[in-house]
Length: 92
Image (cartoon, rainbow, N blue to C red; front, side, top):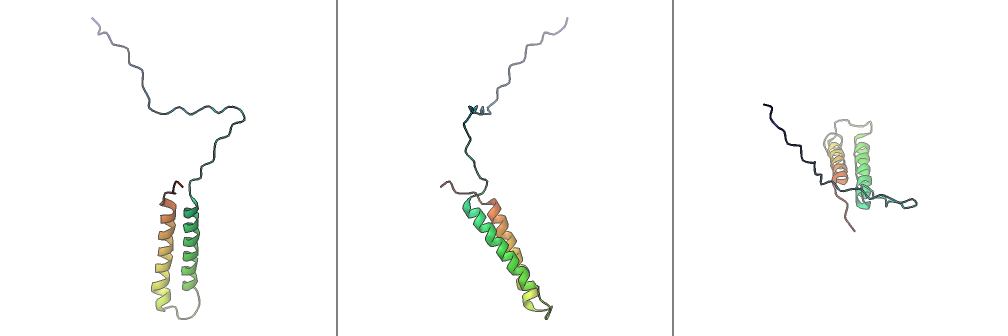
């Protein structure tokens, strides 16, 4: 004799249902980054550019500024850029 199989239970999901927009209604725009994030990103670009300016030039290629300080400034600018990207914008 064959086994009897019970019917499967319906799958319940916890995902919220998106509200249906009526014609003429618009959804508010949400930006990924806040004002502080953009400000920090612009500052980080300026710091990286300053580091490359420190590295440039054609006099004394073995100077302490070109070998040590300028690469640290560039790395600091990149670190500030990563921080600006990953920082959560404030709610206010």
